[in-house]
Length: 317
Image (cartoon, rainbow, N blue to C red):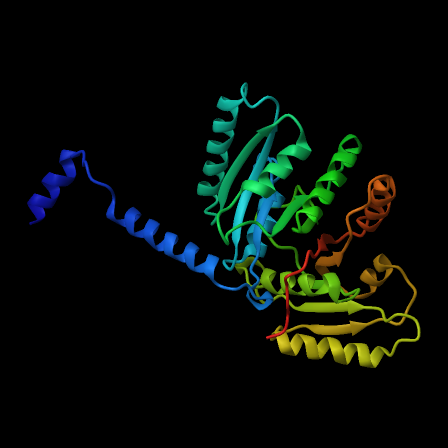
């Protein structure tokens, strides 16, 4: 038997039949997709299906990094790249870019899928991705992108946020040290700046998913908040703890009675590794104001993830 196995393996026989493993995997995937299509969606079953606009992933490594951490083996991750130009002229470049993304995913051992689109206009490319990428119940529900430092691209950046909002996708904007050592989480706690449940529930859930990844495991989660004027701070803290208990998420609650801005409070809370806080995409014509306020916020020497929640998320068990 050993000699026969050696002979067959050395003969390089070209088979004319399909791979049984691939056939079985395809059939299982088909049945799972059809089952998802038939089942009624419930907010408790929300899982991150992230479309990370990473561009050439080696150039914007932190985008792929945070997207992978947040998926945490419980969601689906797609690394997307947009090439601007005429699609008729860039077939070869598109194919090469997709090969490079696949190589990046393979070498970094990421559970992710690549997608590359070509469009003359960036906004049209975003629309195409959000409309067409995915199948059945497996479509991106979250768009992740990095903060734009290029003044010339800030209007287009804000338009991308508005398009994602109109397509009812949650949005994550990552701001961090892009030159740091790869796959190394900074030291400190995972903080959530709670400014209400509208976007706060997604921020808390993402913080919980983040600490499920190997690199962030055992990091404490802290919920930071300041009560509105005349509000009961103790009651606010109690309600947050009850929400966390219902969600079975381990986190501490810290209520600050102060008018100090967020960056001042962040300095008082001890070492923070990353801070989740909410934002709302700017209306057309208010891009400059949004960029100015957000740039000021990001002066805090802490890695940040800005969160916009499109809905469909629940923390209750």
